[in-house]
Length: 79
Figure 1 (tube, rainbow, N blue to C red):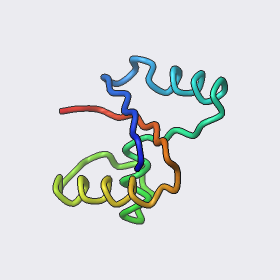
Figure 2: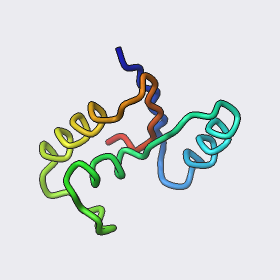
Figure 3: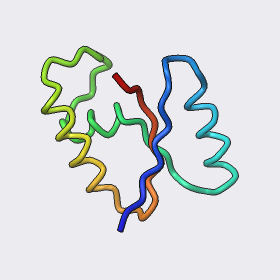
């Protein structure tokens, strides 16, 4: 069973900074929700405009399922 820890917050609040500290102390990986979605969809651009929310959510779920770790640490924004 996978466990997911999700850090959320507005742009610039320090999510990446906090996760970098956690990664170095606990030797774990972390992933941004945006990167998981981009990798699942095969996108490489930096365009953050979302035209198909359902597709993005399915890509996030698929991407989380493909990460071969029992603990997934991720961060992103909530709407």
